[in-house]
Image (cartoon, rainbow, N blue to C red; front, side, top):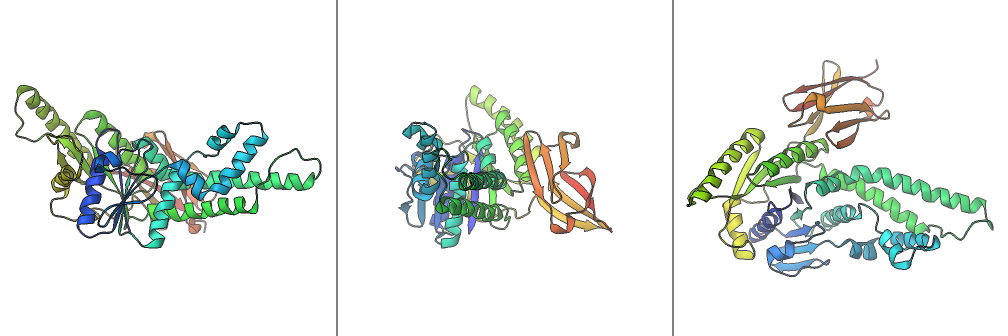
Length: 390
């Protein structure tokens, strides 16, 4: 199953590009679903149809979904929601507030990733396209499998302690609802699903990210940061799509000045991101809404090629051994060595911090007791060196 994740700064047009891609994939015979994870959904507006939290068929080979976390909590994690609501009510929290507080932080991310697992297991789709929130939220989505396992472990231990205390103080316990076996099983299932989701997201053969930007300074800068952080989270960025490009035949003094400004930024994009594949979509003269405009955008971006084709299958993270030294290579574009912080975690992990993003990288079993010798930069690669005990 091919999974394509579209991301970019708010307002750059990623929903339109994602919708255009989905339509073109469907027309080429791929069984396709496009899923919006952004809480401020605009996918239905782009496709010019009214979407809901249920999967809807748009046309032949094309389904669509706008994810609604309240609906997901009620239908997929009702046992967890009911327990947390009961716990809050026992503490005197009003009913409506208890239900709202039962929506745990990050559940939108979990719901989106569980859909990906569902689609992979069912085999009903060839292509899954995800229209994500702006950059910061998407980084949380893509790092969620790593972070969630830590939180789920802590939640699991807390609930176990509550049960142990209750058993040890029978008759003396305050009126506090205890988690049922169903709740504990749901939490354990969630942890296992996150581990599978992590494998899918880090599979460069089938899952890639396409970054959308406009030829302007702020979107370029944000895309550079996003590219760095996505590499840190071991996610494969396969291409850039530069949207809202002014056509060279624009007329009028104002538009010509804008065109000159744009040419400067286009050169900046190429200097920064080459040799990453770069594609373009020109600014349309009408509002970008409806299937005709989406098809025109797909023509500009993909021509007659298949949008489901991957332009890069190279993982940004790999291990190699050379002259008895084990090396972890992490692609880190747009970063200087002094901006990197590196720590040894427990025996089987290291912690890499770049900017305001931090990642715990699990080491293979062969390096559990290895000594970390330090790190260096080679072109865009951060190389962390280890020496195994003799």
